Length: 193
Image (tube, rainbow, N blue to C red; front, side):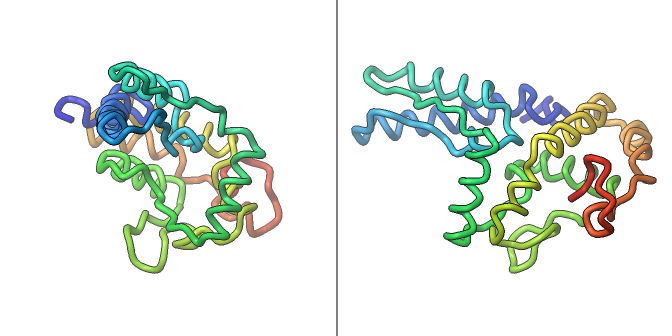
């Protein structure tokens, strides 16, 4: 995505990615007689539901009779249910969206917050288990507070653009944060995973 390498998460780069994927999904559905499409991206609080749904609606509108199924999957109850199914089925836990820019930005943010780097593939994860295993713990990692804190920091990082010095300066403010709140019982902040 030339020119969008430092676009923030949930920015124009993500819209372009969703559009590309949803357009391909809509084409496949049209060619194979499906009448509706949707995406698991709308179940994640890490994604902007309006942004994802807009891509789905645009893509489905290209084909007569094809509908995009929209539903609010991001409630606390649905998030917990999603993780219960994921744990029961032992689904693989991917720690970022899959895009190389998200991997870069997530690892920079993790480093600044004292969280281990994302590990791709293999049997161990950078944080927690490689596979979903505990619905309550997994859902807590995607709590609205955690997601909101991540995006407030990610927005600051994106504002620094491709300047390494500016990006390091933005990340420096998080170095002194406590990383052990979840294990020492003193859970007073949002960074408690």
